[in-house]
Length: 69
Image 1: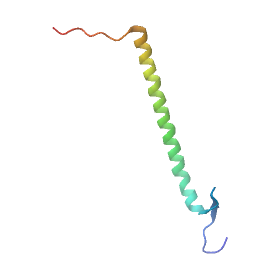
Image 2: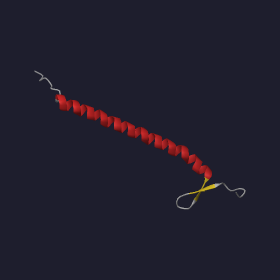
Image 3: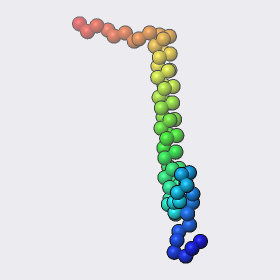
């Protein structure tokens, strides 16, 4: 390593990026991936919950309302 220069890592496009910037991006990427996984889990849970409601409606029909007099 040349004195006064930061160590670099190669990017896919061939350009260099300082290693410090790459190391700082890892926690951000990890946080993003965890956030996306949590969001996906919430969506899947909601879909499952809707499925249970539709199953109940299919078996028992819609609840009826009494007419107000």
